[in-house]
Length: 400
Image (cartoon, rainbow, N blue to C red; front, side):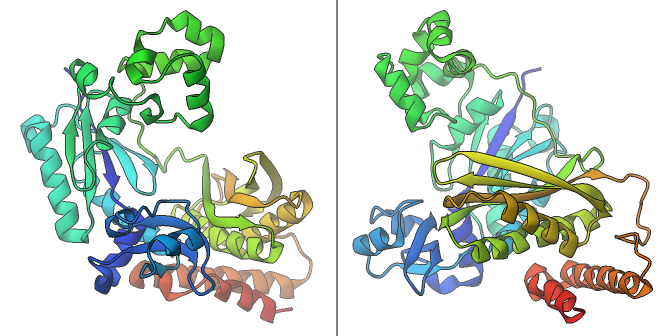
């Protein structure tokens, strides 16, 4: 049986999410970006009306306003985008259990053998697209193929709101004429190397001797040769909670950060997401890890051991200590934090976070756990934005 794989890519996701609660921006150039009041930061996502002016992701706001003085800017709300992303994934789960989320706004779906239930792949893709539009007010593009790589490449060909089928038999016509930098995963540096080797199109790459590519580029050269020839054997791997090894959140910042207090604020938001997710899945972890990627793209990963916990305040406190000890003062481009080393025997029992003789501190920990549990239940019912993570830290500060 031939594999059938979809890649569903949500179009201009952040700003499209904003349009569902700000319908007044419909048909107007708008973008999600860092600091609208001070006109600083970079464009995270621009809608298609803004893109007509030449406005692109990662462009500074200063540059964007030169191109379009009427550009509407909305500050990012990653918690809201996460909520909408989960709603999209819930729709996918109605069609297949084999879902591999690649990022907040796209996922692979293994639809092999589903023709008898939902119809031919093209028909099923139309149904998914129309359902997302009808129920969530969001647009997507869908690529259909026999493997993950070709499905991803196909999804980029008709945007917005388009569906493309591209099987291996189609690649000479549809993919080979494209510039080599169109290959998923190939950036500026690799493009420059390939062009210095006389490789400018995907066809050039596909027909190039694989041993020569390996000699010049190592393992990456072999992988690129396979991709250019439409070969990808990687399975669609669902994200399973039962064998979850870690729970983490990271964010590419809208602008490089040099202020440690601002970085701590970002870390609090991320810690809040991690803690609430860990509580949801009943996972108490003993290892907190932070990941820092600097503006020069060099990375630093550090971790520490804590008593088993899913409390936001403990995850955040450990993360802050790691940040303070290990930040080398270079501008930060990406910041992430994760919880791992799960204590499988802890279940949902009340955990004393520190082995303290002071019963007052133990009571405070119990109160914090109760507070976070109450906040989790409120968010579960009314949504994430109803309570901000600062409430947790403010409550903690009142004890001091």
